Length: 80
Image (cartoon, rainbow, N blue to C red; front, side, top):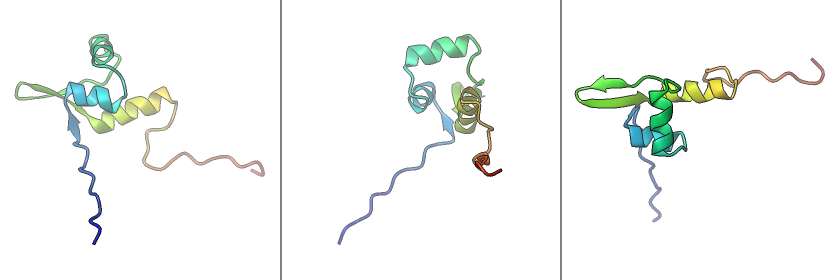
């Protein structure tokens, strides 16, 4: 019997190294962009700074000029 692989869920709040990996950028780049206020602000929980994954998604959507929605934007067809 083959056991299916189960991928663990991505946590909603990410540490700085996890957020950098999520954005596919290095930790130095992440820190520079965060200090320059070019990234979403983190949440402070206790002594930890944690970034909301959905805010990071919205940030990347804005870079790509996409609407930050769950549903992809409607494509205009040639006959419209």
